[in-house]
Image 1 (cartoon, rainbow over the protein chains, first blue to last red):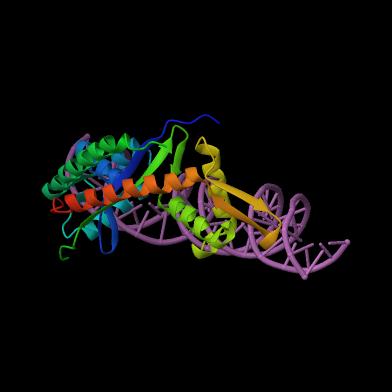
Image 2 (cartoon, rainbow over the protein chains, first blue to last red):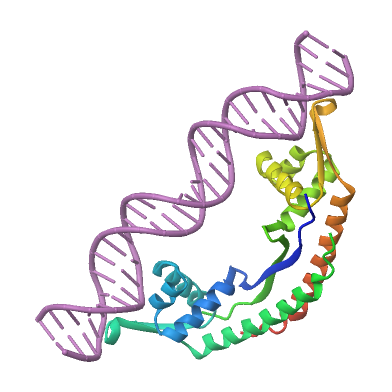
Length: 114
Length: 114
DNA sequence: TTGGGTTATATTTTAATAAATATAATGAGG
DNA sequence: CCTCATTATATTTATTAAAATATAACCCAA
């Protein structure tokens, strides 16, 4: 077999003593909730079930010491969800980390000589 | 709820266009095969099934352009497995990357202020 | 006051993973 | 030539995880 092209990849996340609380997927979910104002719409866009999305939101609200999403049911449009100021900060922080990590991966790609 | 202690964590791995080929678990497996000279013993030590371990070895041998483990069946002790010179290089390379990544995580831990 | 679309939750069903079990094939050594 | 521990592989069973389905609560607006 011919030598394939190797590349370095990885994932980073934020955790508490109780486990993982934030990764790529959840950040994207937060962003889509922010855009659409709806957990359901965000879930549809990401091709996940509403339950899955809701569980994620619920888990985040439960494990950061502060809520990231506030939701309401009923009313105009059936209900809605908004990302709090804190939630917005979390998104920004993650992106900063993520871009540093991206740089790390690129910097070390060259040292993968196998 | 009180603010928990956040920490940054993550994983890195090496992949080819066909997908992931090497991560923590596989490196540890290689090391234990190297030490014990046996896929089975390595699997037992890591509390995984022989099948799982063998599949990993097989997958690595199939996807790096060069074998990392050579195994024999029958004979003294029933058979054995050895890590090739190339496999040893792969282990070393991964550890270098891993220690750099560890440093990255520590360097950026401070910027996780949530 | 009722229709509509969403949040919230429980339950059931299905699919994917992992674990367990079984069985050849192998070859040095007694 | 038979035993033994291991490699190699297939098959079955059990466990988990995901997906699908169902239903209730909710409240603005028509």
